[in-house]
Length: 439
Image (tube, rainbow, N blue to C red):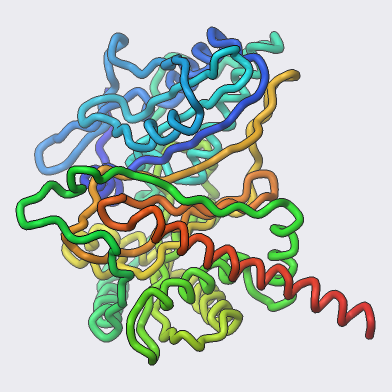
């Protein structure tokens, strides 16, 4: 059994990117039940037990044989080391598009569960839904609840690619939209943040001898997250706009010159809720397009004004329906990389629930980190990625990077500057509340 990849999905094949979801656990874990839950999850979702194969000029997803399909890997080790190892462990070409690992500390009370899925078949929203569904299956097994049996159990169910679910469009309108976007990239080339690690010599490996993926992380507790959102509401913008503005201001301080520089902000856009009928988050397909906007940013730019610009432009983009056009032109990106070239990439998963676990087991931390195989230190500069998600109302921003490009100290300082900017926004909510209370 197989399914052809659409042109949009095919773009992910060469990127070799993956979603790394992890859950730190405290309490007893029934390994047999977790293994059974993972097997049931992959059985219900053919993309997870598939490989990518070339088929003529295109690619297909093809089901793996029973002895090749992914199974839960269980081992003993340290949580921090385990997360770093899984972040740097690719999904092998020609192998399963998913991997699940449970790493337990000696004693069996502290665990880290890591689920890795190829971005060819998943995006942030479906990855989170998949992770939660797996733990729902586990909870049902541990609690002795009857398992739900699908009417077509045993038959693979391939989800349709989102590019085939878009509303009808005139080819001439799409071509006109593409021409306009290409003209924008020519008129407003964006500045990128320079690497602080020296470039490798000509002919060196892409990631250098010591290059590996690390991630700097920014978290806000529920109270600070709530205050940040209150500031956003009071200013008439989204929390995403505040975060994007803070990222842009932080990036500008890493660039030379005193005057304004043209910076780009790339915002992934979830299409699931915007399709008719809406597409469930459980459908394992990448259902994301992007919005790229350029802004002139100087060191004196006021962050709230930047946020209003980001919010207004993104709102106009969506109200025009340009997100559908953007998805249609995505196959042009390999020929025109500037269509998605930005100074900062700010994802936006919104507020999402964590896994529901059986009594006696609790999740103390949940994370979503994007990773990929190929980084290019030879380029000397690149976008800065910020993966933004709020699990159970607590904001988390992950900054993955290759140590062959940005050093840990550089990314730590970048992270700290972003945190300081967000805290200023959160404090502003308290100041406005106090002024309102005193009249």
